[in-house]
Image 1 (cartoon, one colour):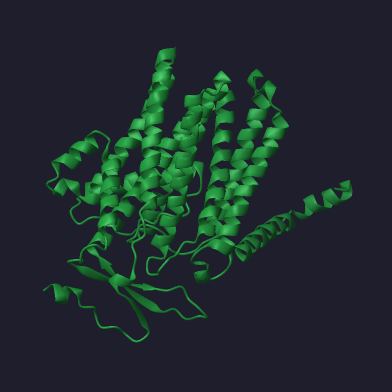
Image 2 (tube, rainbow, N blue to C red; image 1 turned 45 degrees about the vertical axis):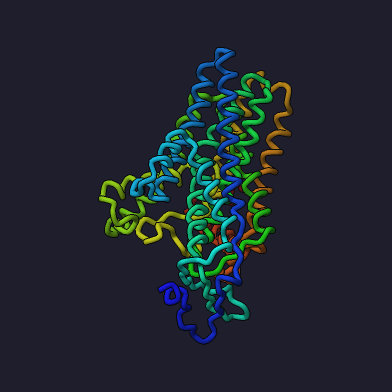
Length: 443
């Protein structure tokens, strides 16, 4: 029976086959990073909350605990859902999840699986087929044997990739915004708060990086995607500058207009939350039933709402790198459309400029110790640097750039040309009387 299961399937002409013995499992480095950031941020938040309690700052203590514990609970639920623990007899694992220790247990499991890999013969081997990146217009199909241990590691990686995104944008992003706001108000950065802000920023950037990689692998699922270190560096720098400038602008605006920051954030949230649903209702497509076979319509609706909730949370701070499409079986839009990021960053630039303008207009005496024009210039340059590294990534470092029908530089030039054409058309459509009057006045 084992020989039949291990027997490779018939190979087709032009198909490269990679047996199990020829493949080495990659170390689960991403899992360790996710576990470290989860534990470090949770511990730092708990330590800072005790400091707030001793100082009598109950509001800051409550918000700090809220932004630390809520994403921690969501992480436990995500790990339980991905590993299907509710349908298995694993009471100890469920109990550890109740104690918020799920990521540590899962990380230890992944580490043990990695150490045991290759020491014993795999009882079952499956074969996956992928397309290689095109070379000279020709793409070859490859076959890989995947053992049971590698399949378990793949499940762990998929779970931690999703939990990193959840922790980053539903916990770390509001946590960083809160702590920076408190630092501005108190004009002091304590060591505990500084450590928490650094960890939160790293968590957000890492979550955004995982979001980019997830988007690439979902959009090119049929291809063997290999992300090079240069791509990771570009994404890291792109997301670091984008998120840092966005958080600083939100904090500056909220420090002078506390009442108006809530409508701004809620407007951003509801626009991105409702946009996928509006497209879904406009398409008149049937309700998606392929998420999970055991789900009822209510359960499917709750999962889709959670997904769009996370999508909205990501886009408040940075571009999500993927467009949701509730009519697609994979729930994402796999077609390339460079106009979407162009419009997003243009509107985000206008919004950030407006928020900075209102801060500059109504800034208080708290900011007398800084040079306001220099700070505005630094924010502007930081945002442009983020866009620069984004363009570098898509132009030179994207692992699937050979599959692009056109380069991003050409599409941006086309977008600029279209906008200029629209402006010229609007100008040429001026009424004759108005044009004569302008000519007589010398305008």
